[in-house]
Image (tube, rainbow, N blue to C red; front, side, top):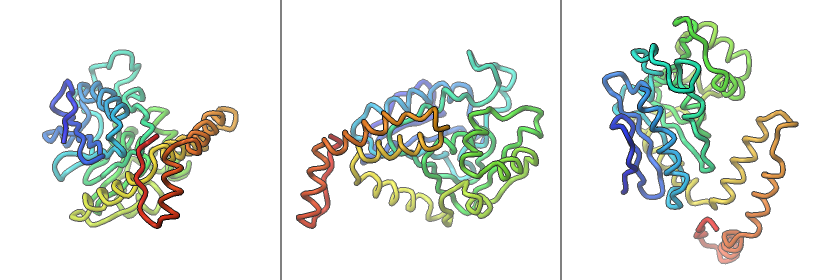
Length: 260
């Protein structure tokens, strides 16, 4: 196991058996995102992106009370440099070309939900609670968060969450498509590790191509990077991993992918 050096002790990043673990660790504020945590996020994501040993990234909250309970409201009067707003910034949620899972338990509120929506897959414990209380605070949710929410649950459910500010339980979140799966809290980490391991066994270039294609499918047709999609498909067929996949299939064994 190796640790990623970050300029705060409230965000921890480590690499363990092919998994990059990103842990929000601000327990006295239920893992609320402070300014220093937001500034450290791109550093952690960049380290995971550059590390070939990392096949999958998992985001989680420390302790058992919260994933992320939102932006740290005690810092709302401190505008982040260049942000133009006192809220979780879009530029802290650096996109990774690798699969990202959100392991959600307890509170997943406001800016915390924006972070979770940045993941490709969201698994929730049965005690998870979701809400966007912006209207109850007199602020507006950032557009990138609204867009991500609409993409996941549709405009009607997004409107209900944004207009009412009410909390949704894990079952409601699953039914509207906000999370992929709900499991008993005691089984959450096992379920996340099993899914991450299964994903990590697959060809990295194939995962990269699929993730990019999914992202482009969510864009307006005129804004899609179809050339990038084609390049990633071609890279898969030209890779050693493709040859390994074919050999493994014919030899009836598990493939050993190397990401090239």
